[in-house]
Length: 326
Ligand code: NCD
Image 1: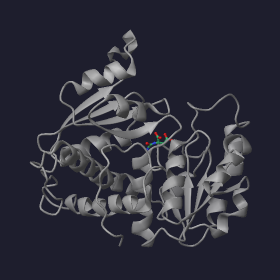
Image 2: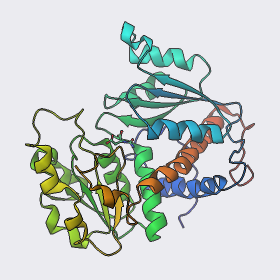
Image 3: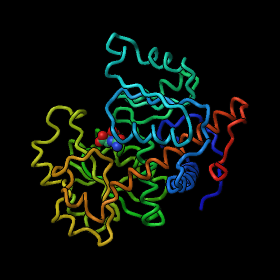
Image 4: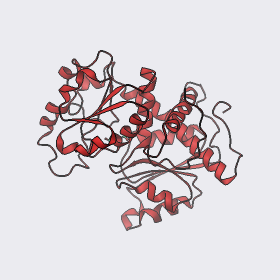
């Protein structure tokens, strides 16, 4: 168990700026909130009277619903913004749209946007707390936190584990956040993908880079499969989907060459039969639905900690409810 650290951050923009102790502190806080989900009344008053907005300028199923439910379980008022059907189509800028949403008395804004740096930009122009729920190919910190939580829960540790992240690394914000989180907590990260989707520059982040999936199958504890991101893909980064599956898909044949207790993960949404074979995704080694379940506890923890930091910086101690007392 890590030393308790005082959480002072008002924004969560990525895992790159966080220390290992801060990451462990979020995971420990999430464990407390996971217990809340087992109660018959799954709600605590920690964010009562606070307003959380989900500002999603890009599509999402899991992340948006998970943040919504997490905020509701903390008793916050939750409002939803989606770009489709909004005044963005009339030419309003991101900052103007966000400032107008904030003017409704928002305390925490959860932002997803196709442009890398969008959440950071808003954190400089707005007064509320900002959570990055995915910005272009940059970072998706809560996805990595829930994955770290899931790995730690299954193995009892993260340090010393070997984690292969496989597929479309270049276009993946999930991969970048995973790399920061896993390496800070002492795991060894092996990145696997075609040269067009995995530039050598990733070696400078302390990862092993290989283009041969078969060569690492027997040594890894976690196989983390990424979605092929067609919407971010520049023209022809690999020849055909069939070719990709042949070289980098988690097929049944490859799965049988993995360690006996290998953990299979995917952030979703998955392309069944492309990066992962269906029966492996649904099998007992798969943690895919556990990842979603843990996402709720992790997002409750993040909302709770940012709110505490916001209260502290504004001198408001009226909502200082600890998760244990909640
Ligand atoms: C990821 C995303 O949107 O970045 N999905 C998610 O949030 N669970 C991964 C992806 O889209 O491939």
